Amino acid sequence: MSQTSRSPILPFAVACVGIALFSVMDGAMKGLAMAIGAYNAMLWRQAVGLAIGGTTFVLTRGAWPTRAAMRLHVLRGAIAAVMALTFFWGIARIPLAEGIALSFIAPLITLYLAAILLKERISRASVFASLLGLAGVGVILSARIGSAQHDVDALWGAASIFLSALLYAYNLILQRQQAQIATPVQVAFFMNVFAFATMLLGAPWLAVVPDVKHVPEILLSAGLAYVSVLLLSWAYARAEAQVLVPVEYTAFIWAAIIGWLVFGEALSAATVAGATLIVIGCLFATRQRPEHVEATAV
Image (cartoon, rainbow, N blue to C red):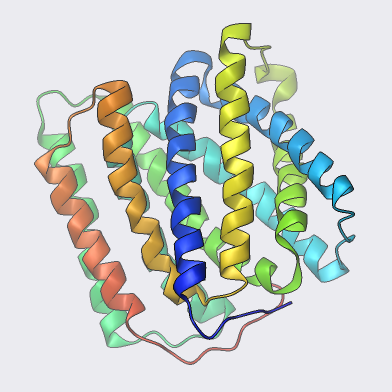
C-alpha cells in the first residue's frame, strides 16, 4: 500500500489542510466540552463520525481490512478515543493555544517510540532536541504555576493534555503503519468504529442526550474530524513521518487565532516562548534522518 512519492510537496500541503481542519474542530470541541462535558462531546461526535464513515465506506465499496490492518484499526481506535478525551478535557480548562503548545511534545516522544517499534536509532541530536522540548514544557507550566491566577483545575487540565500527548506520540507511529496497509477511507471508518466502541464503555454511567442547540457543533466537529483523518492518511501514505511531523506545529497558529476570536483567550508570552522551544527541538530532531525498518504491526 506504500505510495511514498518522490516529491513531498503535495503530501505536505494536504497535511497542512488536514491540521487546519483539525484545529477548527478542536475549537468546536472545546466549546462542546465546556457545555456538555468532554465525555459527551466525544461520545456524540464519534457517533456522528461513525455514520459519516460508514456511509462513505459503503458507497466507495471499501475493502475489508486484512488481519494485520484490523489489529492496527482496533489499537489506534481505542488509543485515539482516550487520547482525544484527555485532550478535550484538558482544553476545557486551559487556553486552546496553551493546550496545543503542550501537545507539541508528542513528536519528541515519538522519536523514542520509533526507536522501539520502528528500529530507528536515537542520535545525540535527538536527545538534545528532547531536552529543548522538555524545557519548553517547563516554561509553559512554570508560568502557570507561578501565576496568581492559576488554579488546581487548570493544572489538572495541563496534566491531562500531557497524558494525551503521550498517547498521541504512539498514535503517530500507528498512523504511519496504517497508511502503509490500508486506504484512507478504511482507516477513517474503522478508526471511528473502535473509538466509538471504546467511548461506549462509559455510556451507562456518563452518557447524556445533548440539547438540540448543540447538534450543529457536534455535526461540524464530526465532519471536520473525518475529513482531517482522510487527508492525513492520504498524506502519510505518500511521505515519511519525519517529513510531515513539522506540519503539526501549524496548529499553534490556528489555535491562537481561534482561541482569541471565539473564546477571548489572550496569548501569553510564556506560551509563545515554550512553544518556540518545543518546535525548535522538534524541527532539530526531524532534520536527522536515521535509518529505520518499518514494521507492519506492533
